[in-house]
Image (cartoon, rainbow, N blue to C red; front, side, top):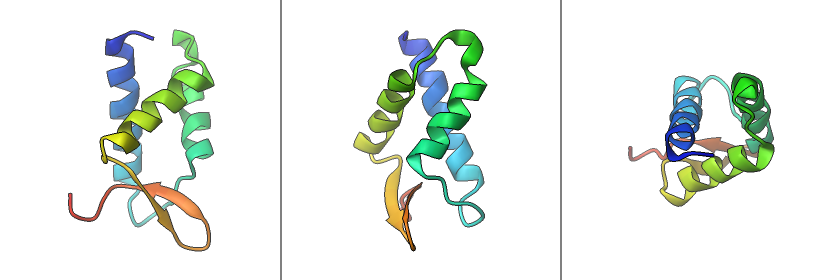
Length: 78
């Protein structure tokens, strides 16, 4: 996966989670499945998408929340 593609995937993931804050809670697997559909034509694998997701969490752009189950969300202070 090129840096440009990785950036595009990260932006799409962040946009999706941000759009639904307070409306829907995404589990990591839900995001992976959604991105697989979105980027199927570009030949991305689950591992590529998981790597992009991990980078977002390492950079603290996404964090885990818990309310009856784990989900990803944007940090409250951002």
